Image 1: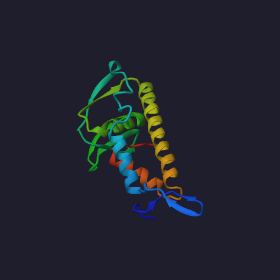
Image 2: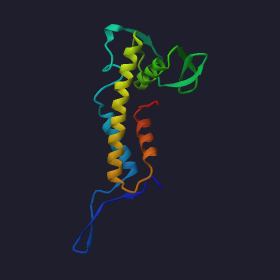
Image 3: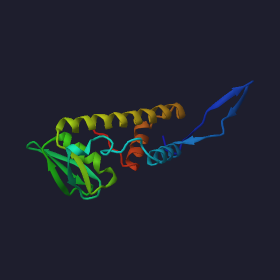
Image 4: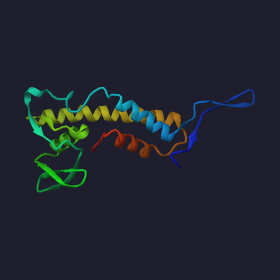
Length: 166
């Protein structure tokens, strides 16, 4: 199924099929959600999830970061070109840093306490899951026979620099 496929609702009134004028294709659906997300999520990570008074500032390269491999208990963080940026001793801390890099900052607050990192991640991931659920619900309503939800949601997250780790 192509992302250009158009879905529309129709209503049958006294034997006549009436098409609803607002036809939505998957490309428009993706654009609508990208615009909504870029217009502002309720909270920004990490700023709205941690208390800076119990943090140390970490310098970043000002670009998107991705998870590298784990080797001997150290977790590698790479830039999008695969160049190593840093290593952390904790998977949670590496996730925290990667989520924090989505808006290309040069400095981020990193909680000194691993429990606070875990709490911030849990709250942020709950918000991401809620957003994903909203997108899925609207997708299923808009495209009742649609089968591309994973592709659509991946495009939305990619184009808004959002990431969701398992």
